[in-house]
Length: 326
Image 1: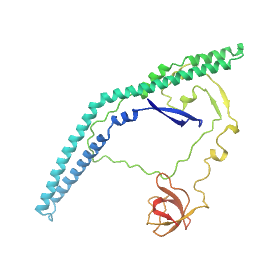
Image 2: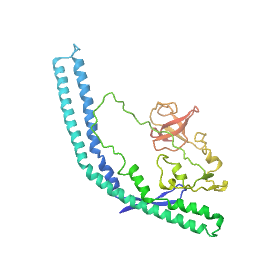
Image 3: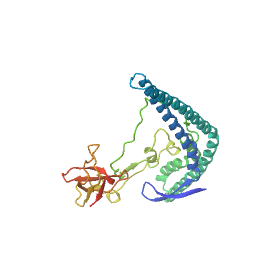
Image 4: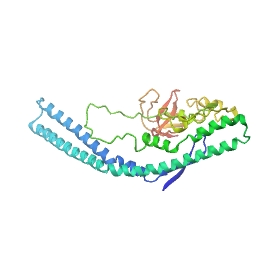
């Protein structure tokens, strides 16, 4: 059975969404945390071994190192080599276990995917029926001048094939897509490790007011990947045009241009006192000493930063937990 939730669609209307129970559990089983932990332990052991070997080799050229110290360094090298051997065996064992569970994992994911396909097929069939019903209601006059237009509309709608769309989705985003199974990765000391830079500025809400559109059946596919075409786009296109007046635009003049400037002076700032010293690491960060007073100009974001102003007039960011309200 699936769990039903409510999420807003593009127009802002709350629509029900369905999630298949067991899907998240199977996703976690595809790449268990034990695999990442084993790989991390193996790479760390390799790093420790390299450092121990380097220290042991450097000690041979130093006159101040006693034989006892030399022996300790050699013992450290031997221990690190043993750790590398143990962690490598554990890493390979976990990989082997993941490989053994792959068929069961694929079978479970196949079942979950088929459930999702059944739900999606119902939606596609329902949409097709609704569009045909709309066509019948719009074609009230049976005017001969509109026969050709409605015939083309009916051909486009009837040309939609739910099974064809499901097969396409299966081959691009389902079990038929290319797989990337985990493989043994040798530790590389020269490989740089990228560090995620903290995001200190809150993202602005973005919105675009729709004023004109052409090709109602092709508008959805234009926002996605043009390399894959569904059955709705393969038929003869049905073209229509419309325009929204200004009263229907959900974005006002100021909002369409980004809204209020977040860096304007805030006359209602809160005075705070620094608890610790802080030296700004970047140009947009403030520097202050413990006991200094400044003005807090905004609430703390999800990254733990606040915007403030020093008494000198400088604006910038600072860690929210470095100050207290006066």
